[in-house]
Length: 153
Image 1 (spheres, rainbow, N blue to C red):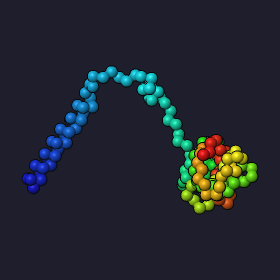
Image 2: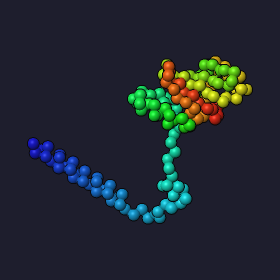
Image 3: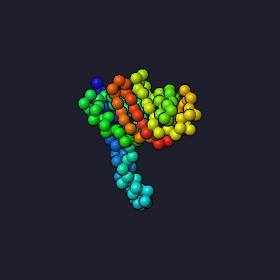
Image 4: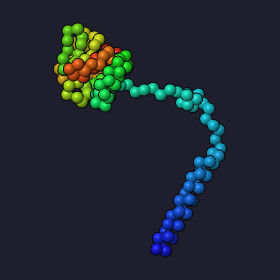
């Protein structure tokens, strides 16, 4: 029993010494002037930019939210920026392009406003990616995410 008490006492002293060294290090004057550059001010006052949504983000929300919460969310995301990436499933004559994005089997992503020359050059299975704005999110039969394309490559 005495050996255990000695070990506990040594461990306690070691912990106090470590905390003391840490406190001295944190409180010590580094000798440097405070950082007051424009970059430091901007960094301190900048509002964080939210990351662009993805189709997977929307799928995740659909699983997490109740029906009532989902209705509100689906309206709130309209007009928000979104990234997309997936294989072309179909191209329509008006420039609409349906792609396979997200993980859900019943998720449909339709891209609107794809220039006709770009749409005409797309083949089934070809990978496309880009960004745009959410036009609509609908769950009538499937999870349909409709996107107004800003850029596509």
